[in-house]
Length: 179
Image (cartoon, rainbow, N blue to C red):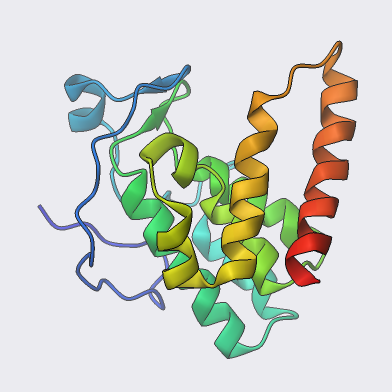
């Protein structure tokens, strides 16, 4: 089976690391039937669906080529780690990290923040170790991902309170990583 990216500028290099089996996540279908019938490549352009092509177009408006290349490397790694995971909607799971990264791109956040957005579920969902993220993407990105992963463990009284706290902690994690 050959998998191709929706972005012609993203290379199809072979994986450097064996993918771990996907953990069962609430709302994420990893059954054999879902995997065999779901698209396993990067999401294609669909109304309302986040795509790597759309993200890279947004980033190219303000990011240099070297930073854009790093972001694409983070995307490839995240896509590889989430391969086979499908959201309840039937979309490949990678569409969620891309959507988070698109929000960060709207705020014109730097490459490290965009990379962390793309990688934010790999530690929690795929047991990727912080040390591996440090080695592949640098300590600031790994610290951001680690901080974002810990947000899920906090319980709140309301959705609004949770969103406000998530935003505050994301900003704090970004500040700490850059300090």
